[in-house]
Image 1: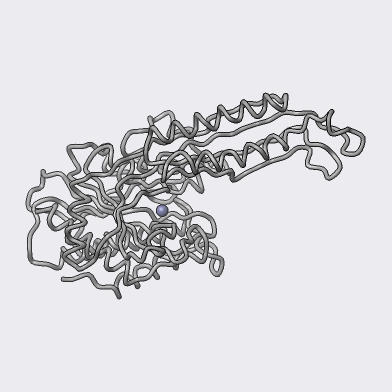
Image 2: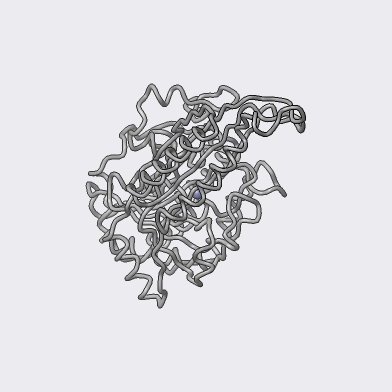
Length: 408
Ligand SMILES: [Zn+2]
């Protein structure tokens, strides 16, 4: 059976009916009643075509369509159903409904496949409830140990494992995900940027997922009277921060074609109209798919920060908040997805993902690939987030064709 766009549309609508903020975008945080409802809908759909459902470590849900060889490694496809607060209808959902539709089509088809085919749902991809993104896949792949998992809780002090049990996700498959158990991983996701739309492509193939380094910078000067302190006697950290922020932009533009750097948060103390600031804190988020360029950009930023603060005679502290290495996805999978796209008269655009995805972690275990579909005006993580059902269905056709070949 071919991919059915109407069923995809219906699945998206039903999943998004599980929403804590109707009329204000989608809010479906991990292990809430809305999350449980959305996951149960997908499980129910998978049960209808005879899939075998397991809850794996960390509350990852795996719906397996058995192949003729029970012991063969599985072809995995899927994404996440948790959302940010007041987010969009397609982030994560697009990847789950397309995996569901591809598995459903395979189940309806008489052609057999040797490898099992799994539809997977990774919890807490966004980190919007428990403060850490890619959490489900981090637990399933064993990146986090038991002690680390136990200490994770939400803003109300409810632990991740407690919330998981309360929502009815009882682990019945205790094994961590291991390389021998997975033959390939494929994820469809909305682009969350405007590159595909601007270039007029309907399908993007992700060659690498950018690495991220985040810094917190604190510059200390002297808070003083805005009227009585002559310009020559000031120790104003905000003046230094202003110069630094302009330089960060220049460093990103001159490092590499895909380097991006953002200062997204700035706090100025005491924050009064008539007081020279005493302390300025700001964040820096730097991304690149090339590890060396990423390191070089961060190195240049740290050096520049120190030098500007020296010139201004100011104290500075720079702390690295988090880092994720860039992940290169599988050439074999990209070639296969490209071949399947061209067979449908589609010329895909090869690109880098600036956002992190669960597939980045699964790529540590197996050959992995991602298909992007355009986001209207590049908007995401907001109620305006939009993608066309036709593009999503097209991505599902390419996914299905690739999975049939991989699962032979
Ligand atoms: Zn997402």
